[in-house]
Length: 307
Image (cartoon, rainbow, N blue to C red; front, top):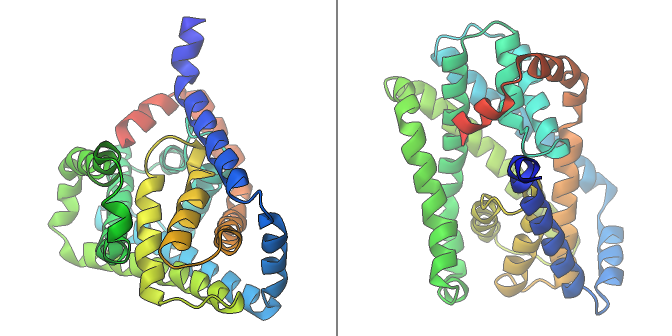
């Protein structure tokens, strides 16, 4: 029993965190919130849903491009279509598989299956995550500025854990493998540019939904508040951020942007839905990669290297 608990403790605790976040969302919306959500969905124009779908498609191309640039700069002779298949597979795994497997682990296994160098691929994935975090960090001051009165009342221990400890720990553990790209600033700038394309598409999608719902808000306020949501979601207390992302976004948009809880949650659910739909192409590639992972039985080692 103790061995089973040690093996599954993290997933069970994160599942409990997800359940708690969902319960809090339900409690938040118990007074007429559900009807408001349904009404919000009716207000979304079909044309704008198509525009958001296009933005998410561009966003996914940017995420592929970000990692592809890092791989090529690291000496990995990979085709763009292979980078795309691995990235989509990782996105699919992040949305549909337990976090003990994880999208990064699946990406690494797929790259190894294609015969690419494990060390460089592992380092490129760590660098990819770090650059994604750096992009969000660049707009984080906007979120802090708009919600300073709210954030200064948070418990000090929670603030330290959410905004400092995890990012710094991640930075310390990846700088050693990041050194390869520090000698190639062009690749880093190109990868960061792709990150910005991804972020602009994401923020633009929320901005479009806000206009449809009659709750216009500054594009840069959206960027800042989503960055706060992003860093909270990094706290490993829920499965793939489910519930925690929606609860955090609803909290900030309600208390800072002045949206109602129903509208905030409606937009959060729509963003999650589009993220999941945009990862579905990965389902075509994941069976072969999962077979390789099962044969190698090194999933735990991969994840330990990445976190």
